[in-house]
Length: 314
Image 1 (cartoon, rainbow, N blue to C red):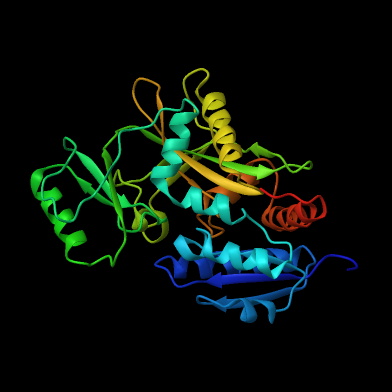
Image 2: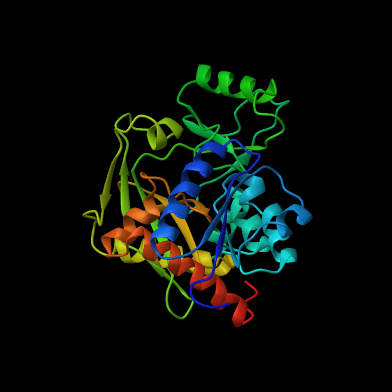
């Protein structure tokens, strides 16, 4: 392999976040070309190992979201394929995609974690006091997110899940915590260890950071390096690194928190393949440190190659 490695950029996937994945994949591909890499872009569904092996590229950059593309199945194929690939290996990807398991790991580390229940389709009663949040255990981009402030909200949410509107997805229920939404992006440094980027505070105009607020309305404000109470930023960034290392994340991730009025940062979830769209948060945080998209994605390709060379198994 001479010069910059060629990169197979994968986008699409079979899940609800397919369109977001395609937008992210375009952003990654364009930035890699600008950085001098030869790019082989492929739009995929749920590919087989033989199909994956037939695609060109020295390194694989899978820019997929959701349970298949980000939650382990694709990572298992990539491990069997044998080429270096960007992102976490299958075990860490499965654990991070499971919001309940992630919160349990956070609790083990002493992080602030809310009480969480699984939604029973046959039980019409909400197991937690209202207001609550109902959302899929294995999904991202706020797909299926429902806010339940009163009994009628809960009845509608329960009926939507029970009716099969969301297929066989498992849903969790957690208390609705009011506060400031913070996200901590992590990026592999020169030695491969994850380091925190500047925090970003997310301020949706309508008060809820749902799918439309993320991708369609364009009225959400993103404050890089927000003004926070003393010690909060360091604590949140430190917790994000500890959680990612405990799960076994590699190369990149984003960890989301809610900061309440008492200064407690409640863990929400960890995303092992953050978006690379124009509104995506990890590129915003990296840009604040002077890392533009071409350098960001090329650095991730180099991190994937370095992981393979040193036999990284996380």
